[in-house]
Length: 309
Image 1 (cartoon, rainbow, N blue to C red):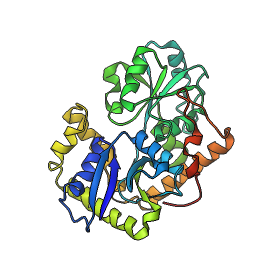
Image 2 (cartoon, one colour):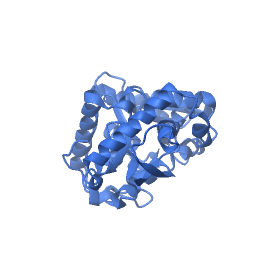
Image 3 (cartoon, rainbow, N blue to C red):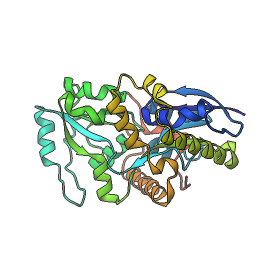
């Protein structure tokens, strides 16, 4: 059976999928037409059911749960691995906000001025959701490709930036300063690891298909963990000139026991984030506008519901 499969070129995804797309593990009769694309592009394509199997941010998946089932294997989820809110050194407005951010155990943070411009890595990324939850959606949000966020903050185009992927390892070298670790904020208020993204399959392909993909993907991840050198060339080829050291950090941070199986702790974390998201939506207007004209209604045909993974 040939199926369409889409995931991001980020090291954790290419590391996990390498063995199954190269036929190094038993795929139980599945073969794959592979597309690599930025996770926000995959979030945005989900309502049109573009791919049988697709990487998604958990934020994006919350909007299409009626269309896609999230697998228990393949997730990027864990502790101390969340998005970072940063500013440029010398940005007085952002610096004054930084000084007001509370580090109390309660997890409360200051509210940014509504005039601050905030670079986010896409409307439906979990990084954007965590910013909204932590800062009540304040500021003028500017969606852009995750790799452009550091540049936009350094240039003064934006006051704050939400860093994900490899940027979170190199921001200090670029002249950026930490305002708030959104993953730590989430851990303080929830007591749970942060669900960033996962692998989803079309619901209309049935539960048996989902379980098969889950087994194959878990096999692929185990192979990668046991033979880390095997995927080296494949990972590096899609890593956009990331240094070997950062590649290793990236994989070690985002591929872990939860990638093999969410387990009870991981499933609880996903449900908690979904509950926070739904509560936040209830407190906000039905439609949230962004600079580029995008809005929450883009994914309206996948209205969140009470379904589990």
